[in-house]
Amino acid sequence: RDAWEDHYRLMEAMIHGCMVLTDRMLSLPPGLQNGTHLIEFTSESDLRHLISYYLNHPAERLAIAGRGREVAMSQHRSWHRLEEIIFGRKVTDCSVSGIDRLGCTTSRSASHQCPYTVHAS
Image (cartoon, rainbow, N blue to C red; front, side):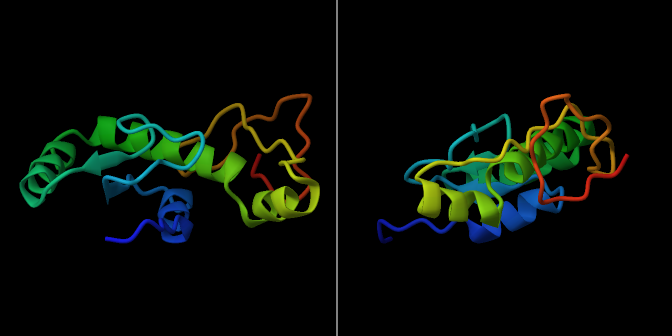
Protein backbone atom coordinates (compact mmCIF):
# COMPACT_ATOMS: atom_id res chain seq x y z
CA ARG A 1 0.00 0.00 0.00
CA ASP A 2 1.34 3.41 -0.91
CA ALA A 3 0.89 6.64 1.04
CA TRP A 4 -1.46 8.29 -1.49
CA GLU A 5 -5.20 8.33 -0.92
CA ASP A 6 -7.58 9.28 -3.73
CA HIS A 7 -10.96 10.56 -2.58
CA TYR A 8 -12.65 11.15 -5.95
CA ARG A 9 -14.56 7.85 -6.08
CA LEU A 10 -15.36 8.10 -2.38
CA MET A 11 -17.01 11.49 -2.92
CA GLU A 12 -18.81 10.29 -6.06
CA ALA A 13 -20.39 7.43 -4.12
CA MET A 14 -21.35 9.70 -1.23
CA ILE A 15 -22.86 12.37 -3.50
CA HIS A 16 -25.04 9.68 -5.07
CA GLY A 17 -26.45 8.87 -1.62
CA CYS A 18 -24.64 5.61 -0.94
CA MET A 19 -23.48 4.58 2.50
CA VAL A 20 -19.79 4.00 1.87
CA LEU A 21 -17.84 1.13 3.37
CA THR A 22 -14.13 1.81 2.88
CA ASP A 23 -10.87 0.32 4.01
CA ARG A 24 -9.11 2.24 6.77
CA MET A 25 -7.52 5.38 5.31
CA LEU A 26 -4.39 7.22 6.30
CA SER A 27 -6.72 10.06 7.22
CA LEU A 28 -10.31 10.79 6.34
CA PRO A 29 -11.13 13.84 4.21
CA PRO A 30 -12.04 16.94 6.26
CA GLY A 31 -15.54 16.88 7.73
CA LEU A 32 -15.94 13.09 7.62
CA GLN A 33 -16.01 10.81 10.66
CA ASN A 34 -16.02 7.03 10.77
CA GLY A 35 -19.42 5.80 11.94
CA THR A 36 -21.11 9.13 11.25
CA HIS A 37 -20.62 9.80 7.52
CA LEU A 38 -19.10 6.52 6.30
CA ILE A 39 -17.92 3.21 7.71
CA GLU A 40 -14.30 2.05 7.74
CA PHE A 41 -13.45 -1.64 7.85
CA THR A 42 -10.14 -3.20 8.89
CA SER A 43 -10.32 -6.74 7.46
CA GLU A 44 -12.33 -8.96 5.15
CA SER A 45 -14.18 -10.50 8.09
CA ASP A 46 -14.92 -7.03 9.49
CA LEU A 47 -16.30 -6.00 6.08
CA ARG A 48 -18.55 -9.08 5.92
CA HIS A 49 -19.87 -8.36 9.42
CA LEU A 50 -20.53 -4.68 8.61
CA ILE A 51 -22.33 -5.51 5.35
CA SER A 52 -24.60 -7.94 7.18
CA TYR A 53 -25.23 -5.47 10.01
CA TYR A 54 -26.15 -2.53 7.78
CA LEU A 55 -28.32 -4.64 5.45
CA ASN A 56 -30.33 -5.53 8.55
CA HIS A 57 -30.43 -1.94 9.86
CA PRO A 58 -31.69 0.16 6.92
CA ALA A 59 -32.63 3.27 8.94
CA GLU A 60 -29.12 3.50 10.37
CA ARG A 61 -27.59 2.86 6.92
CA LEU A 62 -29.70 5.58 5.29
CA ALA A 63 -28.92 8.07 8.08
CA ILE A 64 -25.16 7.54 7.61
CA ALA A 65 -25.56 7.84 3.83
CA GLY A 66 -27.50 11.10 4.21
CA ARG A 67 -24.94 12.66 6.54
CA GLY A 68 -22.13 11.58 4.21
CA ARG A 69 -23.90 13.08 1.20
CA GLU A 70 -24.44 16.37 3.00
CA VAL A 71 -20.72 16.71 3.82
CA ALA A 72 -19.65 15.65 0.32
CA MET A 73 -22.05 18.13 -1.33
CA SER A 74 -21.23 21.02 0.97
CA GLN A 75 -17.45 20.65 1.33
CA HIS A 76 -15.99 18.41 -1.37
CA ARG A 77 -17.18 19.59 -4.78
CA SER A 78 -14.74 20.29 -7.61
CA TRP A 79 -15.08 24.05 -7.20
CA HIS A 80 -14.04 23.74 -3.57
CA ARG A 81 -10.71 22.27 -4.75
CA LEU A 82 -10.36 25.05 -7.35
CA GLU A 83 -11.01 27.70 -4.70
CA GLU A 84 -8.36 26.14 -2.47
CA ILE A 85 -5.85 26.24 -5.34
CA ILE A 86 -6.68 29.81 -6.45
CA PHE A 87 -7.53 31.50 -3.13
CA GLY A 88 -5.83 29.20 -0.64
CA ARG A 89 -9.16 28.39 1.02
CA LYS A 90 -12.76 27.49 0.23
CA VAL A 91 -14.77 30.61 -0.58
CA THR A 92 -18.31 29.28 -1.07
CA ASP A 93 -20.58 28.07 1.70
CA CYS A 94 -22.63 25.15 0.42
CA SER A 95 -24.06 24.02 3.75
CA VAL A 96 -27.70 23.01 3.76
CA SER A 97 -30.46 23.00 6.35
CA GLY A 98 -31.81 19.56 5.53
CA ILE A 99 -31.78 16.71 3.04
CA ASP A 100 -34.93 14.80 2.14
CA ARG A 101 -35.09 11.06 1.44
CA LEU A 102 -34.10 11.63 -2.19
CA GLY A 103 -31.09 13.69 -1.20
CA CYS A 104 -32.60 17.04 -2.18
CA THR A 105 -32.23 20.17 -0.11
CA THR A 106 -35.38 20.87 1.87
CA SER A 107 -34.63 24.44 2.97
CA ARG A 108 -31.83 26.96 2.63
CA SER A 109 -30.28 29.16 5.27
CA ALA A 110 -30.53 32.93 4.83
CA SER A 111 -26.74 33.15 4.60
CA HIS A 112 -26.51 30.53 1.84
CA GLN A 113 -23.71 31.52 -0.55
CA CYS A 114 -23.41 28.58 -2.94
CA PRO A 115 -23.74 30.09 -6.43
CA TYR A 116 -22.89 26.91 -8.34
CA THR A 117 -25.62 24.37 -7.73
CA VAL A 118 -29.29 24.09 -8.45
CA HIS A 119 -31.01 23.02 -5.26
CA ALA A 120 -34.44 21.42 -5.37
CA SER A 121 -37.11 23.14 -3.35
